[in-house]
Amino acid sequence: MFEYLWTILAFVLFGVIVNAIKILREYERGVVFQLGRFWKVKGPGLILVIPVVQQMVRVDLRVIVMDVPTQDVISRDNVSVKVNAVVYFRVIEPDKAIIQVERYLEAVSQLAQTTLRSVLGQHELDDMLAEREKLNRDIQAILDRQTDAWGIKVANVEIKHVDLDESMIRAIAAQAEAERQRRAKVIHASGEKQAATELVEAAKTLAQEPNAIQLRYMQILTEIAGNNTNTIVFPLDLVKKARDALS
Image (cartoon, rainbow, N blue to C red; front, side, top):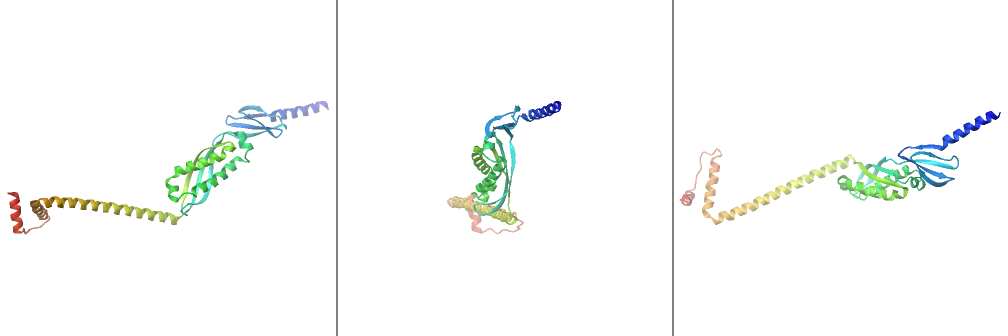
């Protein structure tokens, strides 16, 4: 009878010892509570937790990559878009992550969703498409500031996709085409203006030399002769003036 009791006691004691031994990996920490009160953070390696008296919660210190679900965002210029993102964060103070917030993973996810909608809703569509890096930094700074009390460091935020409906895509394409046409017209008008200025300068120069006008006229006629023209009629007074200019 006593041998049977000793066997049971030995098994119970062995189970208690095994249950008291905890092994934490290099990237893990154990938040230990003693009689319900926070005691200390332990690990990594082999630690002992007194059964019943102490309880331990494991916390992973590695960088966590969290996808932010697609959010419906209305931009400042009243354009509806669908945006999703990814958040990189890690726990730096395990005790705060367990004590200050319930289920810190879910808390960070919800906070990231609301912050994404709030920040992007303050910008126009062009900003979302052209200034993505700045928006990433703004969202990261807000998240990092708000999660600091939870012992969490938000390292980076990346906006992955900004999706538009088909009608908006067509409107943007039409706007881009109109902008290209506007630039082409501006360049053409600038060229015409420059050409007109040069012509005015040339006219002023020719006006100062009357003979130059006649020589220029002769040059033009010579150019015309090269365009499959068989007969060219020269005014007599023009020939005399050209001959006088060359003599």
